[in-house]
Length: 302
Ligand code: IPE
Ligand code: IPE
Ligand code: MG
Ligand code: MG
Ligand code: MG
Image (tube, rainbow, N blue to C red; front, side):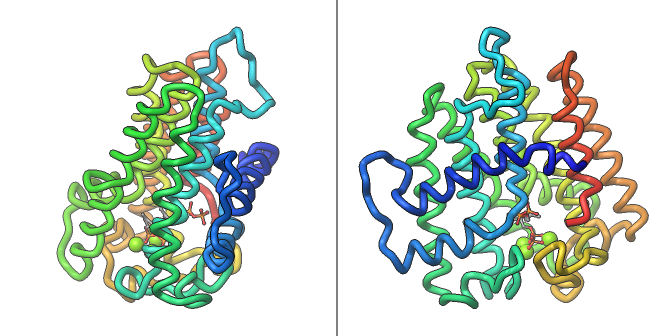
């Protein structure tokens, strides 16, 4: 059983929170998203994604929750706003990543990309909505809401994912060092995973564990992106729900281009080992879920 299958009840709870957002903005005041935007958001958000960033957040919260609030097995509800906000930000990043001006992709999560299914303007605006609404949801978190908002904004914005996405575009077709590519991958993908783990800690009042959780998430996210580079050459398109060979066509800076497939695979495994070591530091006792998530990031097939 994969860790995703093991965590199916948590994924279902995240999916329900995403559906509530589409239906009533999840803000408890009954405001409706306009129907055409609702349809576009549902197309991107309710498609079958792995929900990995929410799971990293929830698993970290579960592992760090005080012993007086045992949540093992049950979803750590205090982290659900963060988990939901993370998936909105991630989905916005995919919608914009696929635009013609960026990676120009036509298949995502097994569906036509949003700009293909609807229009480029709709895809831009749906991304804008997801990015903005994520913070409205996160601001209602029961614990440390302001700290969580700042954590997620720093990870996603101009010093985080957006910076990484620009560097990714600029590095295409150019010689890139292993170190420079590490910085790109850490920003474009690692930061959101790092924030996911940090939000899990903050959500259950474990702010003393924030730094270590962040480091665990960052290492897991780096491993995840190295494996994503590998999947661009070896994934099954149906399982992955996105096209293969696009990095090659764009001459993107990837670890496969720099190190070949066996070098990239060795790096993914090393990165997962680093993440596992951090997980064991973070939760010396019961770390099994965090360890499984770190391993899954590097050996997943989709
Ligand atoms: C794809 O992320 C984008 C990257 C950062 C590589 P995922 O592989 O997590 O995409 P979904 O959410 O499962 O569709
Ligand atoms: C995407 O990286 C990182 C994001 C911030 C979306 P990729 O461009 O490699 O992701 P895929 O391969 O399109 O999913
Ligand atoms: Mg990209
Ligand atoms: Mg892409
Ligand atoms: Mg990719």
